[in-house]
Image (tube, rainbow, N blue to C red; front, side, top):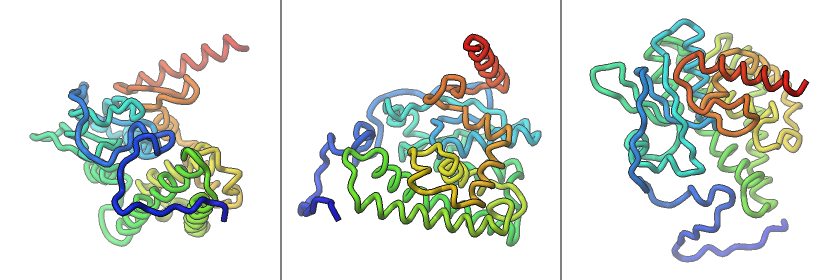
Length: 293
């Protein structure tokens, strides 16, 4: 092992410059750093997010609900740029005291309801509209088990493997190997499950698929950490099959665009307030293609 040995101090202290790419937004204290009210649009559902995997889970769910005919799922999506520290504004902290995206305000009832943590938002929406989550019994329990599996496993993939492989200021063998091993174990868990099931929890598409696809589906499709070859993702054939099938869903394509502020311009939709917003982006893409033809 080539890592330099480190002896932890008796009392840990925060060194702001030590943290890699996201050092400027990570800190050991909670609460707001500045006053900033959140905007509120015309729809009962107000989403404050960014198109990271956790954000994509929710925008995919909302677009799937709309595609299924649930008109009450119309929503306004506002961009929270975590690189600029928007998540530490007072309005956002009021919605999510943990200062993480996504966060949702549901104004459809007599009293506004705040919902934070992506898994909680998925369950809230599924129960609200009676969709993508079985109402009772073993089928519901299976979906919930896989949803909680994803919520528990994501820190190993994102905060563990993704951080040390892609974002840490220095690359060390031990943490990369440790989290690569765990990521591959999790991919194997999924591959074995999907060898016997079309979707994660059986033959029906559910919020478990949306949650897991946003992380592991995009990983095997080569969209996370530029690590597909390193992790030999093509060897997980059942995961790849499932990831491609979900990726082909129109609602998933739209959900990936919402609150996206990176990548090619035609894939970005910083804010979403109406279905026609996607039509504008499509026209922009077609115009760009004709200009380069």
